[in-house]
Length: 346
Length: 220
Image (cartoon, rainbow over all chains, first blue to last red; front, side, top):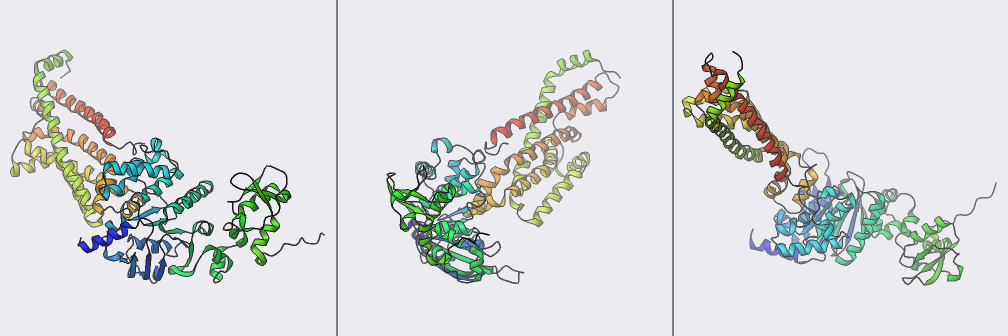
């Protein structure tokens, strides 16, 4: 490889905490197909941003993502990471600096968990000690006890554990960019919520630039810094923060994709502290409390579940700082939430 | 002609050295042929597994080789390479190729698209994927092909005595050509039993080899 390209790769590789990604008029046209799979897709992703691609099956969201690490080669257009033209780099070398997680995980069954995570470090000729230290660190990061898991084989792990290893493997060489294709799609709802929460905590500390493909709008709202709602041929219908999309859907397509229950979905994004809390004394007696770090949806959930008119809000030290009721939650959403008036009793 | 058990035992006692030598020769010629067939078969499989046309051509060619009667194949080889070990090894390699090539191709193709994609997505070159992911995953399947080839060649090698080849076939042919003589049955029976015994022992050995060379993560 020419020296110049090597430097370009090193510059991408050096940026471990997020790189700028630019896609410019990217098109993918398969031969013998009347319409393009992706047409004139342009987007700029800021370093450290977590971007969600949301759209129905077959809209081209995965194809768009896979052109960034050249698993799929674009027909035309340009893609750059940190100003370096991706299409002029050696694809294999490039991919070693882009984390990649797919729904089916794709762990290598004949390798131990430690060997799976060590694949990219090995490709980058890291020393054995450095790789072993990194494997240990990553297993701890994703919540798997290294002593217990490092020497197991993938088939000895549950689906959720395998997906954690998948994420750890993608992070092995500390790449600035991560591409994730419905990584939590195949797990059960409870595991998925847990993985999502862990993933958010992880991203808060590592600050990668992440493209995350999903067809689950709720997942997009929960995880994304910005969401790109995509329609056929990967056309961007709206590209904005979750709060803005929920508050002001750009068109009917976006509205229909958001679906019902916009208000409930917005509550996920708002912390309890955003509400004007009532006095702590107003809280109903009972064991259930809401934490200041919870979202309004968590608060509403507890209110509905307990059937109590108001619940105590407690801080990290378990000290009551106020109370919250359905009225106060509604007040945060303001006029956009129609007030449910009880129908005349028949 | 009836079986005289005491006679057979006496024959074995008298001919013990010969029997061991022929058993050794038989095993050696089979192992040599399998080793050569493995190098060729796995190599060719790795070259053609992802190319539909060459892949079909290779499997068809190896299949045709298998349909040639062993006696005819050995006879055809005499004018080209003469008598003895050479035509025997060549014939055995030809018979071994089909199961080995076919299982190599099947094994390499059986690796799931998700694993292939994640391997490429992590920055492995296609050659690295082949050597570090596909080949280890296909290994138990390839070994099964070699095992089938071993059974086949142990039988075919007995015919090699026809071209003055090595192995237990010499006893069998000697027995057949001296029918009526005192030891004819002893010769034929000893050769045949030896072949059967060898086949059983080699098959058992393959179970051990497969276990010890397959990743624990792949074992059921």
